Image (cartoon, rainbow, N blue to C red; front, side, top):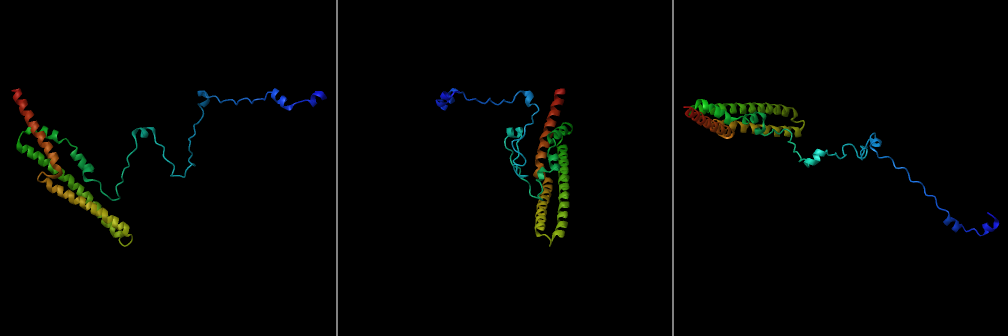
Length: 215
């Protein structure tokens, strides 16, 4: 560039005439399946995001589909479960008394046989209740022993033992009441006796109809 050109050089025109270099775009990582096959997906949250024991639990897909789980109320310590929910009574009432009565009715077909069958059910029911009374009496005896140990040492534990003891004693009184009612076919055993009686009558009718049709 000679001196004349340097004297009349306009930097603005030079800037306009010279194109500005544009940086090349960064290469985009490949999203092919092969490129992601070895990538471990990290969770959005880390155990360090929240203190231990306070991090929110993540619901599983099946839990979300089923909806929220209702809260389950915990039974107070020392409280006995419902008497009708005990395994012994649940097993007794789960029996097919109608089928038993139907079977016996088809063979014996008499009022005396039906009464004897019902008396057998009453005896079994009373034996089951007597067993439950003995189990609760053993618990009450343990509560009394523990009360003797905690008396004068921890009034709170003594009061809790006394409360549990009174609950078991109420259960025992109720069981003894049902044993007495069962003697006359009343109380909890009445449903089983009714089903047995209905089945017995059906068995008698079916057996008679079969014999009549057979003749």
